[in-house]
Length: 117
Image 1 (spheres, rainbow, N blue to C red):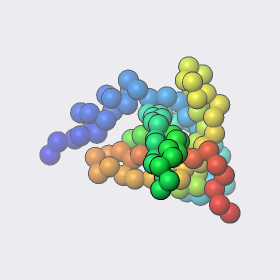
Image 2: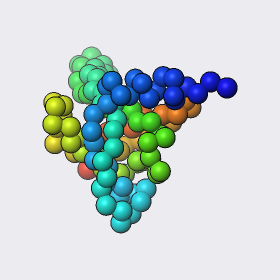
Image 3: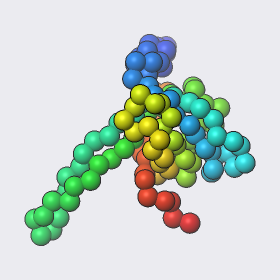
Image 4: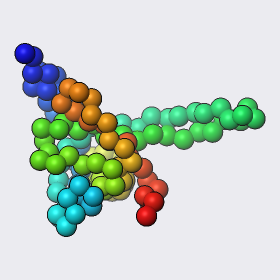
């Protein structure tokens, strides 16, 4: 059996990862925030509306290695960028969605807008 995490995910994450702080509001209520690593990604999205106008937005995501977490962050938890070298330093997001990739990782879709109560 091939250990995809050890051969690919870990070496790649070491190169591209940034420091984050996870506040596990939903996954571990009452547990204090803790530091972790993730691979930050921001991509632009253009959506053509029915009337032909273009709605422009962006999507922010964070790739994580599941092995790095006892309980991985999930929907409703807070993520703060604490890597002072990164352009998003100080930005706080909440996890809007989490999708495991089946290879030892997960992609967290990050949102700026407050989650619905």
